[in-house]
Length: 134
Image (cartoon, rainbow, N blue to C red; front, side):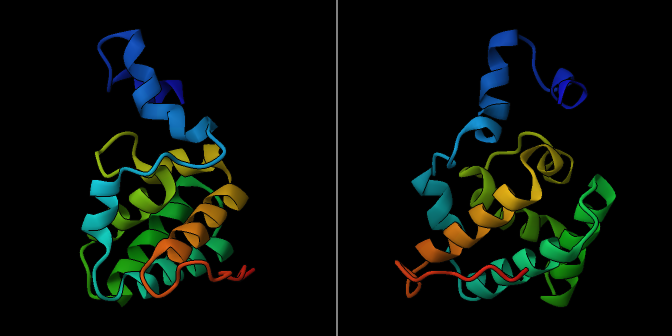
């Protein structure tokens, strides 16, 4: 992670804000960011992100391509899909580390679990068990 973090901080104390979500069992959800991504179709979008990531090569190019493919299939710009995925996985909306570059460090299993948990938080899905698509 050091090469990703290096160009994004001035002080060593700023690292925590960029990488804490990688080490926490669950992301700390910024409710304002969460409210901004709860739009019509977000459950389907996140479900497709989860499905695509579950079968992609778990590498930076593989993850980037999977997010891009989902965006294209939904007629969205790639950054819109990545923003929704970022909130689902990290709990926050602000740009930090490039998502496709940081997810390999989080791992496939934890990434997919966080996306399923995010779907389970959506209106109409609360408390439902979101199945593992693998």
